[in-house]
Image (tube, rainbow over all chains, first blue to last red; front, side, top):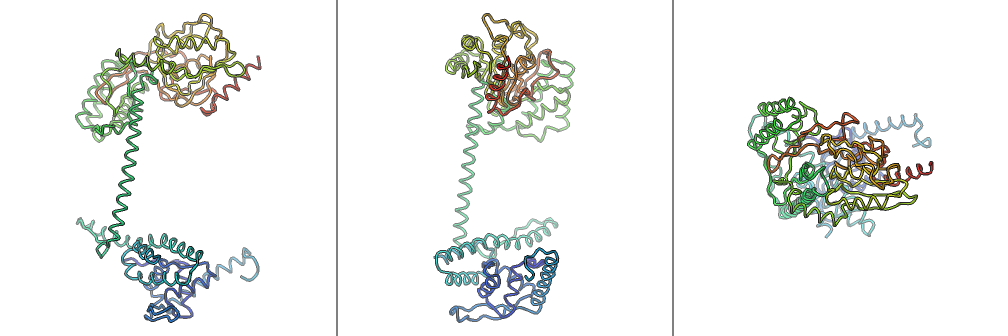
Length: 116
Length: 461
């Protein structure tokens, strides 16, 4: 099985990394967190979500923590995921890349308003 | 219920994905379904899921394929044939059911397509049967099933498929060589073309061809490489060619007469349009011996018009004698009509003036289309070259049928120019290139354009 490509980092994978920055989450938790941090614009479907999770696991940017219940969601045991230090580094470098882009965009005055 | 549907849809993913994340995907679906209730939110959920499926299923299979291709290439290099198991588990009942339904749909579609192809073949065969009345330069000499019919009739209605083998190729080449030597007008060229056909055969250039149409085209090309004569053709017909042209038998003639009576000799419309413009829509140039009275009556009824429009847009040709008969009305002295098949004969001259005809000095317009063919092209070509008519419409079909037809066997025949008619107007005629109109417009607009031109001309007077 060839490794899935994370270069360039797909936006779904970047969003998952960002979702895991603050806390460990299970799949549905990640999906909800991503929806929240994108104002509902990105609703990851199961296929895309777990495909991205698998890629990030293979590259060790995230890791599986354990199986446990989410009391808010019922008795089912869920697999939780955690950001690794490599994943954090990757998320930071991607954020910096985007920040660089943003600087260029600002310099070229294609953004409306001074603060975006 | 909706969970079952989604579980079924999950089967679309490759097994490695289902094993790793199938349960979690289902769990995520349950979570969302529980949290997103109400019509619009459910609708949004399903839209999300379908979009997600459409994007992620192909991607997941994309991860499987390169690994397998890489592995199989390795083995092929070693020269060992091998099978690979894509799925580690035996197919489930649902997968088998899905596969069966898909197979039936595919087979059904294929069957429907095949039946449609058969329908077109039927039309092709019918056309070739009709050709004695509405196409071909002449009933005696034009092939009854021309190459165009042959192409459309690749499936015979009786299901019998003609197969071109080495023996048949040899037979056709031998016959073509004999016909060239015995009949072709230029003896030197005939010998050279025959030699070329045999040389190509010797060097195996023909061996790979098993398709009749392609074989006929190949031999025609080989002959024309030696002598670029567009009137020389070797044709293939999937439908068996008749032993004798049907028009020559008494029964054939009787059928033709009856058909012409029913169709008013293909004089479809004879009318006087506004501004006293005569309009004659003629769909063939029928045999004079059968249709002379009809032609004379039509021309007489339009004798007093100020301008004349011949509509040849649906005219597929016919008899040179009818071409000459109708053209005669348009001249006050005998005119030579070029006909690529015939040496100068009495028929090559119009019997002008026609007693009582008042049309000899009236402006004439011919409407043409890409369907205008053969004899209709002779009429158009000659009147254009004689500057007696203005052609309005499209470039014509380019069928000269000037060769005398020789039947080789049930499927092959040759058109051979046996005479060398003198073309007084130009080095080439309309064979394969068609007759160019003077005023180029779409066939559908040709009548309106010609009417305008005629009105303009009449007003100037």
